[in-house]
Image 1 (cartoon, rainbow, N blue to C red):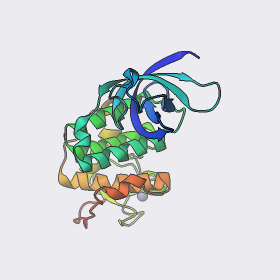
Image 2 (cartoon, protein in one colour; image 1 turned 60 degrees about the vertical axis):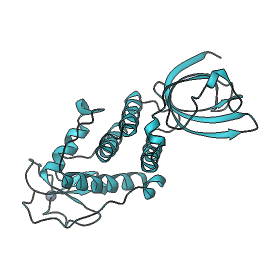
Image 3 (cartoon, helix red, strand yellow; image 1 turned 45 degrees about the vertical axis):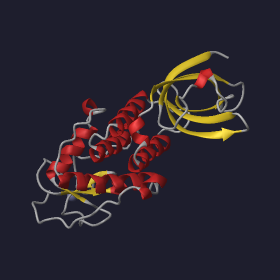
Image 4 (cartoon, rainbow, N blue to C red; image 1 turned 90 degrees about the vertical axis):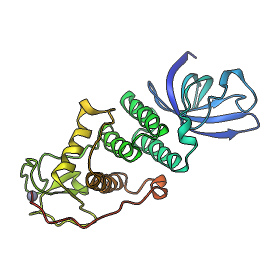
Length: 260
Ligand SMILES: [Zn+2]
């Protein structure tokens, strides 16, 4: 079988027998890959210090004649993102990002855009750069890349166009905003100030993918967290397993404001 090579991020590893490892990657060219690294638990020049969760590597592999597993031939470490391993909360954040990537892109669904986003996000949190903002950017952009962008242009009930004025609500079943004439604000239909809608729009715009310059107020961060948590839970039918270990979303009562 032909030898293939791609950049990849290691999502997890598991012992296999006495000396092998079962490794799950998210690769730039082939999406999610699961493979056997023969002899990786013994000292092996082919895998020197490269098979740790969250590491970015150059991997060489061959497909097997049958089954979904591949043979991992060699692995070279490109970036181990060491900052993630030195902080428990960063480990949880990285676990959440990895889980979301796997849910959105199961086996044999490649997305180089998603790979770049995951790499960028792991790099940012490893350097402890704006961890909250990075998480929000990752969630919004991953959902968009996966085909679950939020419709911010008009109310899904009455079709009224949103012109960037007044408070709008997020309506999870339609994946869209709704106006305050059509729906009441609640835990399941969280509200957004115009600044929040604008920030989400910027995050979802394709020319801003992979950038991480979400500079906004605490209120915008709080509202985006609530909206994205509702959206992700509704799309996947449940919270991600790793989400329950992260900080819960704190909800605040909105101050009276203009209606959309
Ligand atoms: Zn409406």
